[in-house]
Length: 576
Image (cartoon, rainbow, N blue to C red; front, side, top):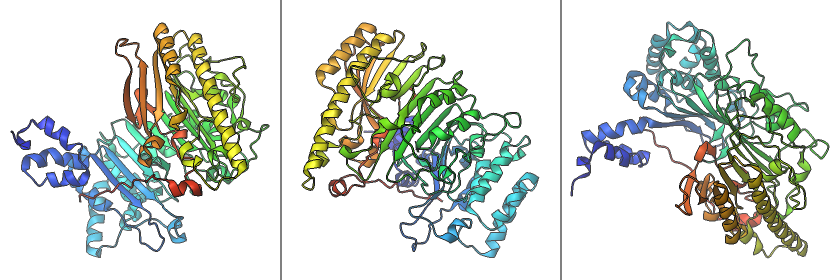
């Protein structure tokens, strides 16, 4: 049997790529050949985030970002290996006042080492007068200054995850302003060429907003970052709380004064103020081709400076139509999810989302739109799921791929087996639960009927997908799936059903994991039914982990007692 080292180099590299960071580090010590193969993988993903302590009495642990900077500065070959960079501050509690009013600085070093490091950096940027504004920050060893410098020396960076908390990265903003200027630093010559995938104040691994109580968040510099093609971020609640008028801090740059952003894909995560900010954001992204809006509104936690009601609803589809029209000539993919809830109550006591919706989403003028994933009411125009209501749709003739979500239905938040065994429920709770379950089944019947009707109205459709509830006992029956399969076969339309796996496998780690069952594939009609697992995104680049993937009642005492979920904290190991 051949040894591992004697295998083809491509095969060794493939095997090593599946290992965790510590295991890759150990392999580099086995032989010179394995070192040459594994060393680049150590630099492929670099995590330099500062984890806030669980207790304010525990000191913050600072990553050795300065050592890493000097490593890649001296070794340009290693710098080219870095594909993904994660930086910023992740608070677990509200930070102390001294941290909110000062900059995060790295640990103390000797004056000799401090002067040596400062002089080394100055020797690199001495010809860059535009970078002189961060000289004092470099001398003070500010974390944000080193983050800014890293962006200037990583030529192959493809993914950037930024977590800004209380202006701790304002030096980065200064450098981004210089990068976005008409005469950027010559240090950037030939750098930052790859298309950047940027995540801003959103933890793409845990699936949660990283800074909930944040007072400042200016996206202008990030939106106009050179090379950025994809932006994944959330809008902080505080932007809307500080004013009773729609006056966000996302001030659009005048198009005549700056180059429009080249962003083609934008994902707005887990934010309730998306409707109030959407127009300002779309004005800055005239080349946008894919837009995802993850609408989230927790009535028990979100302090809204408005009284949303039927006269002033949270989701005004007429306004959405007008705002989306800004990019109707370029938009090819539109995804909208809705999670309107009260996380302190059980699934049968949730607020009525129907009162927060008005108007109709008219997409008939979006001639470039090919992929659409939205809740049923946004297509049917009926938030009440009334089966006797006439079906009226406003979809474009160019639509090729349609996916319907169960958001805004009574089946969205069901977590049946966990709740039904409670001994603390009153008679009223039991009646409410029974009513909610009956209404959920009626909503699912409505969704099945409307799905078949929509297939008759969209002759150019190539694929049709529909989400199933997180509660496994409420999914469509096999007979319904067979009817959907037969209908799609006759029309040569690919048919899929999508199952969220977080509640099925009872693990928070699977917040963005889904099982996609293809009932019929128009390209391979004889293949039959088959299953696939997707994490992060599915076919077509559609992001996963939206809305109903979140465990709604995680804070309720009854669920907390029986909850088997565990939040996975990723351990990061420094290699320098």
